[in-house]
Length: 287
Image (tube, rainbow, N blue to C red):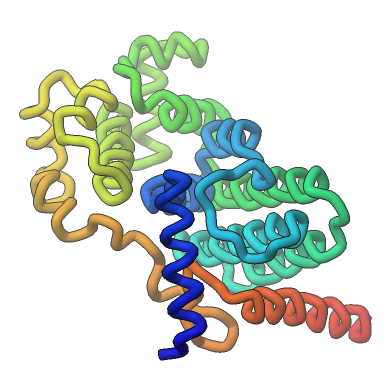
């Protein structure tokens, strides 16, 4: 082991303890990438507007220069988003090409405000594409609006008559239309989406089963457990035991076939930039 590296590591750990510096939690980091990859547009944009990449606290220092440090953290974020979106169904070449475009923008940025704007544009772009991808079954306008409403109100108790009224449709007609286009009833779809959200929370947080059932507005904890087991074959606690903090898409590879680590050296980040530049030069030559 390199003694100089070990000394520097111990020095940084001591300084962080002294300053009560806490790293951003895995729950929040992985959860955010998961939200982008599943097209949760409203929540993603709320977080991006509230937490600018230039103002993040509790993250490592990759460079003593502030602009470069923010740039490197944004590059990591873009690379992670690209791989999560691949794991959720985005075309590999499309996702990598998008990440190259935004990494090139990072390289050209000269202020942290520009990097904040790139962060927002990138997250919005990926999120909209993933939301469109998940709607690719070409549903009618009313069914699309219903699905978007359900996805945005999973924490509420969603009643079919109220949803139909929101859409300006007759209850019976709406229920029939939804079942015809999606293959499941409105009530079943709502339950399935709530269970999907519960799976996400079980993987990325330490909220109790009771907290999750209350947050998702299940009538009782036992009803939540019963519905969860019916869909997954596991109780919530069994599911958490199997999947807690294992949501990172381990099958997603870099172009060279290696797994992308969460932490990067400055040399690895420089290589990401160089790869994006080479692709841009190649694309320009081809055209």
